[in-house]
Amino acid sequence: MVLLEFRTLLYAQDMARLSAKKLFAVCFCASAFVFLIITLQVVEELGQFEQTTHTRPLKDREELTQIQAFPASAVLNDDGASPGSESSYPIIVWWSPLTGELGRLGECGHNRCFFTINKSYYSHSSTQAFLFYGTDFSIESLPLPRKPQHHWALFHEESPKNNYKLFHKPVITLFNHTATFSHHSHLPLTTQHLESLHTLTSHTFLLPLAQKNQLRRTLAPVVYVQSDCDPPSDRDVYVQELMKYIPVDSYGQCLHNKDLPIHLSDSTAMDEESFFQILAQYKFILAFENAICDDYITEKLWRPLKLGVVPVYYGAPNVHMWLPSNRSAIVVDPKQSPEKLAQYIQSLDKNDQEYLTYLDWKLKREVSNQRLFKELKERQWGVQDMTRDNFIDVFECMICNRVWENNNRLHEGLVPRVWQAEEHHLTCPPPKLFHFAVDHFNSSSLRYIWRASYEQSVREARALSRLTLRNRNFTATQFWREVFSD
Image 1 (cartoon, rainbow, N blue to C red):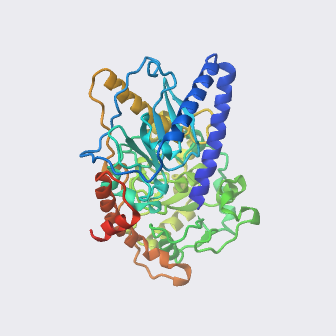
Image 2 (image 1 turned 135 degrees about the horizontal axis):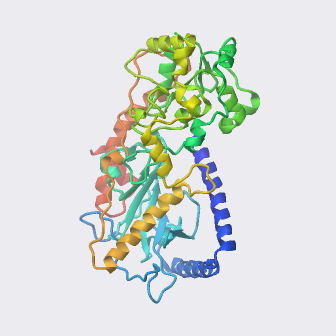
């Protein structure tokens, strides 16, 4: 629920920024009036089409022997419009209504595309791409039959537990374009929770070690704040075992033993400065992800790094690729006992000189990891940055520009490019449980669901792939029959 609320808030903020940018453009660009007229013409033309188009369910049509990403032939002018039809642009449909926009003519460099969540544009001759949001991806509603010109694009930045079907080769390879947390994706979103190098090196919340040592009289050395209990990573069971060997202040609903101030008790307050100030008092933060996948790195890691607290991290196995320095986090080895981890944390708690080696990069404001440095400098989108597009804008424009690239190639008599998602664009290993004695009072039956859910999703992925490649509509009943006949 927190992730969904975050996504809604993020998009609302970014849409407000986008509106401000458009207003600025109207005031200062001489071509804005012409652009408005063109937009109105497009909306009018598409609105007329909507009145005549058929609605779902769609009738079965001829099957495709192979799914490819190329649009129908189009003759284009240099300005990206078809001759004789100044308002003719590729239509891109959000099949998962992430943006809520009924119609918008978006500018992507020198290209323009019409973006909409209106599914009735499925049959429009100008429709060339369908965008899917992974969490809302549903087998009960797919744009089938899939025509030769139809691109499919997947946007999924959230936890694999939201939709395990997508994390298997039979399904991820149905898409032509991807924007996921994997650095292998067409549009990698690995650093989606990190605003900038500046916020990473900032000393805004950093407390002197002497002050933290003073606070240790009333605070535990380690803090834990989670309210999504018993997720696929099984983090709560590990933390529960860790608590046997070292004091941990747990403010969230999971393993709760310490209360936050009333005004911070709501999950929406997790970005409040007063909440950061509480966390900044601690020497260590347990930064445990809800799922274990390469590149799946959330605010759980970046938050302590920004606050000047040493993260004790359990999550992406390749996290070293993204840490600001070689010694900026304690990376948990799941094969090592919590008792040994507790002993190591306690040794650092007692040794100021050794503890400060984990904050040396922060004190010097130096990010030595060139991969992270390069990624933040070169990524096309910004996070909470009013001067830059957000990653949803950039995702839309990536698809728009690729559609136009193939349109132009066809016009020039060239073979269109074929984009294809690959297995490593979105993949995670099966969830694993820790084999510690469990306090059933602090755990739930949900803990035992994830492995079965993952294994079930393997069969669902194979069934969905078979049905989709037949290229005709199917019902939920047909889907589940296919799943259980696997």
